[in-house]
Image (cartoon, rainbow, N blue to C red; front, side):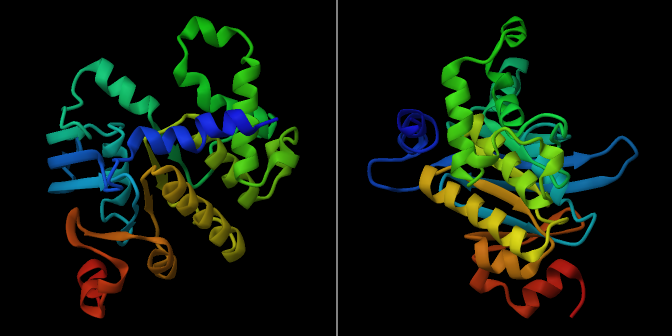
Amino acid sequence: MLQSVDDEWTGEQARNDGARPDGGRNSIIRIRDVEVVYPDGTRALHPLSLDFMDDQVTVLLGPSGAGKSTLLRTLNLLVPPTAGRVMNGENRPLETAGDIRGHRTKTAMIFQQHQLIGRQTALQNVLAGRLGKHAFWRTLWPFSERERRLALACLDRVSLFDRAFSRCDSMSGGQQQRVGIARALAQHPKIILADEPVASLDPSSSHRVLTQLRAICKEDRIPVVVSLHQLEYAREFADRIIGLSNGHVVFDDVPDALTEGALSAIYGEP
């Protein structure tokens, strides 16, 4: 029943949209000389330039206040850069209101506290991921059968098909976070940003959530940028680790290069 929707929206379509014929990587989003200074004068990010590729899980590591959340929100332009540019994969700066709005509809966010409506079912919460695809007047009407099938396919992808009609406030924290992943998939995103998505979960649930995020990245070529505090998860699930300290990028390499010296540079202690 779900096969055609699953092929179109949560697998083959995403792979065909982003993949090069030679199997090489595509840059999905670029930032150049981006700096963020908050109104109170706090410099959250010093000038930095980064590319995020279509088949990479990138983990942001660093102590609290290092700039991880600011960097994530700058990628979605929820925090506008004070200086520098955020660009799409075609090197076009995202500056106009239309460009920014279009970018946000293709950028999925996953939060530490899930941001679900507890009294609604998992299916209803996943369908909320489709709201940005419609004009306001269209949101006054029920979702189409096609979109309901898409939402069910997304829940099936995170092994929650059987909980589609359960209220989210009856679910465990790990299940709620998986509903959040399904909602992100329903957006048909070009990139997924996750801000400490496992901070409140037990180890088993954390492992399952990160495993599913990595599978989505690899199967659909959707880059995942995730901030974490758990070093062991960064080593296990990341293709690339970006270490931040006081708003500076002090490490940018593969997990195997994360030496004691690199950790000292990130966390400021032996």
